[in-house]
Image (cartoon, rainbow, N blue to C red):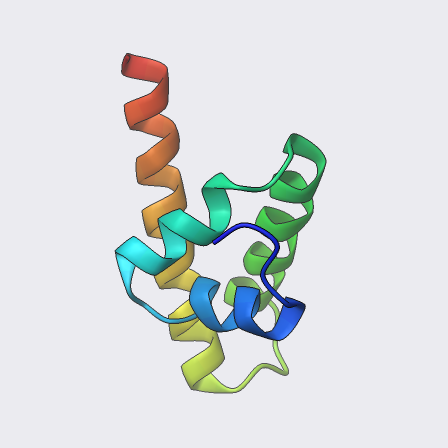
Length: 74
């Protein structure tokens, strides 16, 4: 999923599909990963987001945190 258009990237991250989330996230550099995680945290915790966006952000965070745990154990 390298070089995805921005809208396709966010569609994948917010898809609630673990495979699409992992594929989109893994191709990012560390700075971009940090920025995406910060944005997802805001979406998941701050008011003003549509309830479906909140659910999608929380789902993405679960998948991404799971990836980080597996990476640290390897």
